[in-house]
Amino acid sequence: MCEYRKECRIWVPDREASEQQRRKNMQVYKQENIQKIKSELNTLRLRYLNLLSKIFGLSEKLKEEKAKEYLHHGVGRRLEVIERCIENIFSIFPIEREKLLRHEELIDVAINLHAFFVNIFGLLDNLAWVLIHEKRLAGTIDKKKIGLFKKETKEKFPSKFRQYLDSGPIKIWHDQYLINYRDALSHRIPLYVPPQTLNTEQKKKVEQIENKITDCIRSQDFDVLDKLSNEQKNIGSICPFFIHALSENKYVVLHAQLIADFNTIEKIVEKYCETFLG
View 1: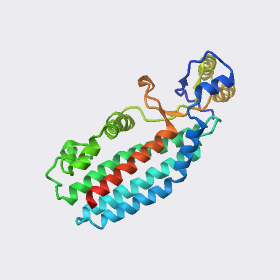
View 2: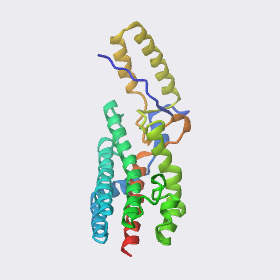
View 3: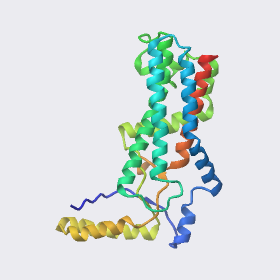
View 4: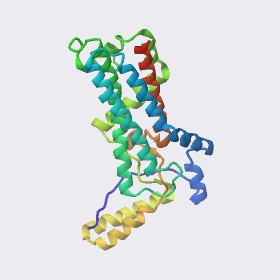
């Protein structure tokens, strides 16, 4: 049975229609940056295990069982999911891949991207709840005000850790990036990697095909529809970005951002453990 999905694509204005020029215009990474990202990817599992070791070290210092539970089964589990999501996305969509992703691969990337964001946000909340339970503050603070970056929770931390959370790079990462994409995922338009990028000529061709596909659907000419859909799938170049709403034009480079987000979480967890361990 024919299955047609009219998906959003990124259009890249391009005066030169040649393949060589298109690749040049769409090049996101320099070769040295590709190697750096791949190098960090190769150390990801070890860094996750090092963080897990720090978490276990902190757990030994905690007195409240509920705090230990949130640390082990909250922070610990989420860290592993975050690490695995990155591994999965890089496996499906290697940074140097040029062949367009199949629809099933795009969906698998989206699934892992969704889990990645949900668990980053959840991990930060788990860290807040570890503090709340360890200090026996549960019930004294409105649950809606418990969060690592929320004022009512932050003021319970030592000043050094509060200053770190309020520092420019971390605050911008949380307020302008993480909240925006997490809220879009939960309440507005879910995150996804567009199926392809199109230059001006390719955009016109795709629009022509989509008009023909619409006619085929109306006439129930499914044999021609299949051929048109397959033709459409092979137009354009692979998209190295993720986005939620096209109308907001908030494109983020996929591979580099995944690594950067893990680096940020790694630093937050390390600083958090140092705060408790003194």
